[in-house]
Length: 287
Image (cartoon, rainbow, N blue to C red; front, top):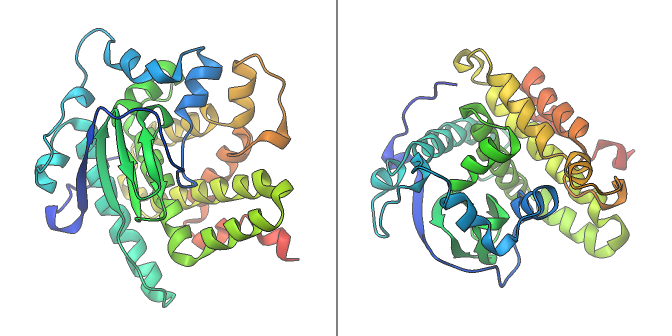
């Protein structure tokens, strides 16, 4: 997918530093659980996962890091993955802002923080082992770009569209935050704790659908193989797939992100319709 190059003045990009440890606080609802992927699927020690990725033979594009205090342009050009992320962020902002204006809902761009090893967000401390995440408290998307190497090498989910899907999914959680959906779900989870996981699954599937909607609105930029990359990534991070690969019993009651089939289905729905109204994963609850 050939996205236009970002305009440095149109994105809020920051450096979160590096070298942090395991998290000491809570994270937003958009966490892609690399700690689960590594510990359950690949039998890795979560505390050592970043070191494992970094020690792989040969330096990757993601292992170049701009220093703290760098400008947005310097941060975005630190490596190929960072540039892709900035291009995606710019495109996502340009796509969603008009939709919010049309719905008469105030729009605020999220910030994008690149970090290495660990960082602190408005939701608490975070480790790279937890993968990309969205923090609703500070409207921030946080990414250690070495995660993309792990996606490619350990999950078989490589390609630029797979990485754009991750960014667009986290942005989907920003959309949920701005519309008030995230607050509604958190309130419902507190009132009915037994339904907390099921409600979380609906949140994640809606974010997948929103990712598809964004891509559909730029269908002219989609290249051969892109859709397959996205579907492969969605399938790879389904809860049932992770549990099966870990040799565990598949337990739908423990799902937090949805099955592989569900994730593929909702990403595809967004891609096919290009309509955010088609992403109402809570519709049946209101009947």
